Length: 360
Image (cartoon, rainbow, N blue to C red; front, side):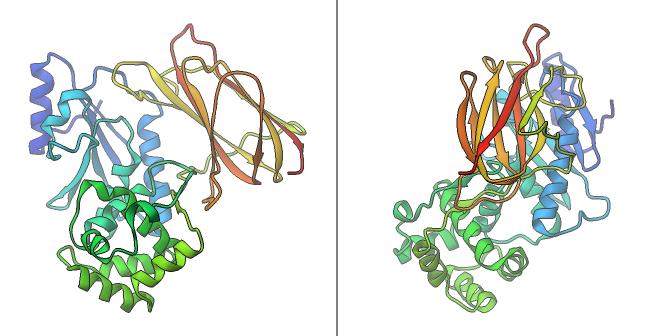
């Protein structure tokens, strides 16, 4: 196991781990140096999934990974997050860049939101916080759509919009997400990045408005009004990797597999206290229609079926519960099935069956 404790935080992490009489863990991936003080064993597929998230994220950004790009991911469960440079009130984690080195600090073993920050630090200049956080929020919930916040935010209130564009408050995550999602839906990623690069970190609300008008040829208020009139949702972007889909057997698709933490396909642990992991598999739904879906063996976990293409405004992500079959309308396209399971030796393997019933 490779160890690298050259950074000040790395030394602090090592000393903390030694004080707690536990062996710190570090694993190297293609893009990540993964470190943790957790006593949980890192499952075989965890670091590979961080790398896969980086690949998918750069694809979303329409950027190539910079030559030699590597960042630090520090999983700090419990009180260990207090050692990080994150603000005391930000228990969700943070990402920092210092002298060109990018470091993620997170209470979760896998946090796509913070990985998204590492990616924009690698290829884009610092900009306004609402752009940073709005972009990272796109990575939060794979394959789902989120209802608009126009009523809650009172988008017609100029003073509230001024606050979002100029200053940052932790209550602004959702409106920042909506604003960034709308811009990308309306104008595309390339022009969104042009806008990002034209806005300095210390820009005023008036300067942000002027940059928006210059890049897009419309006011930001006109964009908001058009999106609200179109009942547009703010949508997360799926982070599906390029693994081959599992084929159907006629009108029926099924999958079942045991879990073991050491398996290369197991992503985990998901928590500090429970041996819970995830197995990801892909399937292609051949035609839009009605499907019967059944999930078994999910007493200690669950499953999520999520579309691999943005599905605004349709919610294309479903939680599958253990129990009798239920019917869903699925759109044609690729899906990712995330099986959340305890991986103890006595736990039965999860099983999911999907059967085509007919047209919508």
